[in-house]
Image (cartoon, rainbow, N blue to C red; front, side):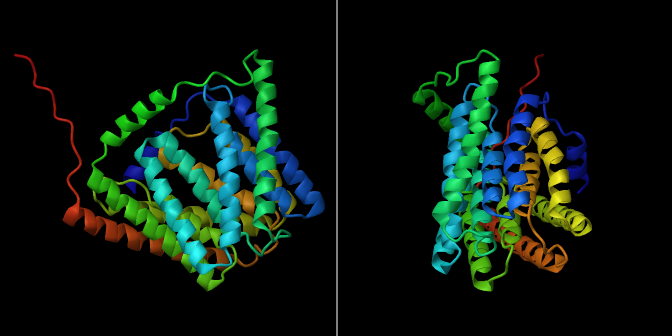
Length: 354
């Protein structure tokens, strides 16, 4: 825990991206305001899609391509999660495949791992919001999600035009992508990655099945806790897994306390929008801190119109169950690494010249 605290104090987000932050605030603000006036949960999906698309920086060379991928794949994930909520086997299979996809993306670097975290969050929100709002069709959820992303892409085109940039920059060759991905994959031993992939698939399958069989509302508190806690860990230690579980519990308690204190959608949105703008402006470069930032924003967007903050025990129970599942899978993965995993390669110190 002391190491985690020191790491938080050394938090580095790079220079503030105020253009992308303004884009995120306007992209999420309009659907949230419409949701407050109409009390329709569809606008929350549009705001979630807008936030998902705003995670990409439009000024980067691959920013628009990444924004397109975030919007399209996020809409599919949200729609699949909403559809799978009524089928136990579909929930198990979809979350197991998402865990495998998350492990595969983490293998090829932190940037692709961040993409996997966003897709996993969309799947969790899609399953957890089924039966709570005004929508009863996964296609409608995916469409509204995509509309929010397209609204942010329109703002991104306006930002690029204001800077005199090409609306759609030239794309690099696919061979360059393949070489970079192979270079990242070679840094990780195959056996350790297989153990991590199996752990992610098992954790996702158990989380999706637990939410479906228990029938608990707000199930994304459980699944998000599991999917964000299971991360790549090559040293085979349980300390980091315990730290991540404790961090998830502390973060959930803070969010529950804030929601129970406000108990008003208008006040929650008024506090949420500045948080989204600041979070996007000072987005963390570290993978774990990026997961914390985006998860908090995703949860607040999903709870934007909630009127049941007087029932904090429901959210707390989901979080506790998710932390227990994540800790159980982390322990099993730890034992598997000790028995079958090869030690991670270490850089040897260069010999000093005489």
